Structures are given as structure tokens and as C-alpha cells.
Image (cartoon, rainbow, N blue to C red; front, side, top):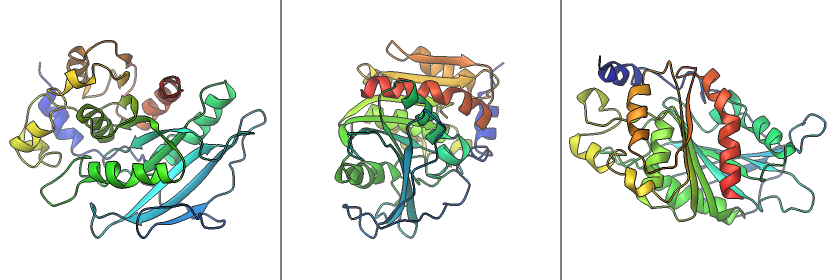
Length: 295
């Protein structure tokens, strides 16, 4: 029985199960003097209090006015290792794309990525930074309303990270649900030089247009222009990892998407649903995968 219409309908009713909906936590500390997008404010929070034996991770947050998201303040957060003998920003960066209803804080507040990064570092993993930015609910591509969060990433946020000192020759992309789709789309379109790997948790992908997914695409032509199934050959040279829970209603379409990808594809299908519990269970492996390929 084909359950894809059900999955489409329910996906558009879901938020990211609470991921990223926490309010941006206020930060303290001196303003960061390094370059930033227009109208950006940045603040440095104290280093996290890591358990004994774990290298600390420093959290930086800020906001800017994006010309691709007019009328909306765009917030960002970056988690950076603090290691002896290393500059604060002398690291490759993994850019996270949040899910529907989420924001830049979801990967940290909901999934605890900063703690995962600490454990990754303590185990000897490659030091990487994790960066996240608000993308609204426009599915990480250009829309008929004039918004274009993919261009915001490519032309504003990632160059901002480079200006702060992160290594743009070693970029990883990863995302969850809507953001998983966005990460796979951007990695497939070759708009961002320096991508070394892409990972997606429970990616919201479809093999054909349906009117019930019009919040994700403006028309059949818009779907065709951003069809990640058709773009699969473009990922032949890109290390990739995809994970999806076996109780996730998207699993049939995700399996179909994975079957048509150029091999190899890391990840797999583990017990779990389209929720935080599942994403927390696979995030350590995602961070290890990204660290390996960004090292």
C-alpha cells in the first residue's frame, strides 16, 4: 500500500517536534569586532561548563538583517571548540539547516549538539565548529514571495563565517526533515564551493509533485527546479549520510531516494520516528561522519 500521500499530508502538519522553537537565549560578554553581515549584532557567551575530561565548546550568537528575508531578523548560533594552541575560529564548519517550525537554536536546545561536540572532541574526533541560522519555513530555496533562504546561506551567512575565520574550504552540510531536504538540495546544486560532506536526518523528500505539498513548492515547475531525486547523480563525488527512523511515515520515500543515490551512502534505517528522540540517537554518528570528512 502506498502511504506517500499520507506522509505528505502529515509532514505539512508537523513542526520539527519542538526542535528549535525555544527562544533565543540572551548572551553576555563583549561584542565581537570581526566582520558580519549588515546590521549584525554578535555576543560571546562564556564557555560551556564541560564535564571533567571534555574540551569546552564556546557558544556565539547574533543576528542580522538579510536581504533575502526582508522584514525578518535572522538569528544565528555557532558552537566552536576551545582547544590549546588553536585560534578560536581555526576550524572547518558544519552548517545545520533546521526543520519546519524550527530555528537556529534547535540543534543545540533540542538535540544538544554542543554536548555531542564535546564528547566527539574528547574521543579524539576532528575539531569542527557547528553553525546554525534561521531559515523560516520556506524550505531552503527561492520562493515566489521573494524569500530565498538558500541564497541567504550561500551569499550572506557562509561568507560571514569565513570572515570570522572559519575554514570555508572544508564545509559540511546537515539538516533534519525540511532542513535535511535543504542540505541535500544545496549539496546537489554546486552553489557552495568547499562542501566536503552532506548528511540528512529524516529528510523530507518527494519523488513527484503533489498539490498538498504547496508549502514546500510554489508549483509543479518550482518542484521540478528543486527535484532532489533528479539531482541525485550530482552527489556522486560527495560523501553522504542519510538516516531515517523505521517508524517515520517518510521512510518509503527516503528509502527510494537512497536507493537511487550514487554509492557509497552511509547511515541507515534504525528504530525510531520523526522526532527528537530519534534525531538525538543518530546525531553523534552524524557529527563523527562530518568530522571524519572535514578533517
